[in-house]
Image (cartoon, rainbow, N blue to C red; front, side):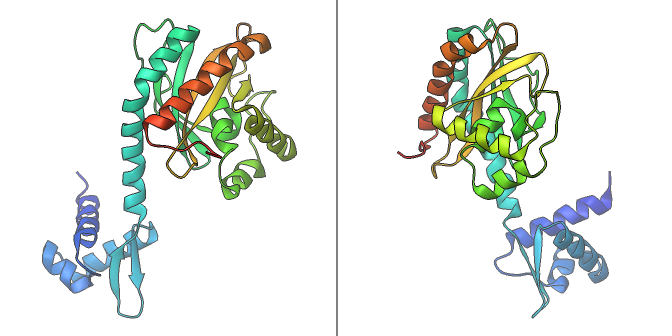
Length: 251
């Protein structure tokens, strides 16, 4: 076991639990380590963004990065648990594979998957991160995201297949279409043989936090089939939004 790593975590915990800002001497005394060791570990935590250093008095305080990570973990747990009944219903309604993804910066993280026919939940893509612009679920969230995130995603979109939208202007036009119709599609843009439909799930501030997706082979998920199934995907996303106390844009 890496002792230096464990000491770093102990220093971070000590700083986070302190009533006020912490000094090197106090942290070293509390943890039973040398001042030079405490100072080195604190500098590493500052460099990684978990701790802030006040140059005026030389003291340290935990940043909100810990809170941000904790919020993401709690969001994954809460949304997944609340969403599963709606995902199972969507799978039964459509007889297609259903995914749940969480917004994570310019990426989507797959956190749940329901197979079709809905015989049970499987790991599948769970844990995979993928760029927003290549996924139906990703574009569903990106369409309602703050401009800073949209600009980041549209700066240099990476191509994954010959169908991936890599032109920034075309991508923004596609996002505008998503906002008009309330759902997004991916036609072989992430995996060449797969089409998908996605609709965003919104948090209490009316911003996207997750999305529901439906995936099927391109030969089966035709334009006509998309028109038939998209309302079910939108309904599932809206229901989960309501279940987690979220607010739909414009409501």
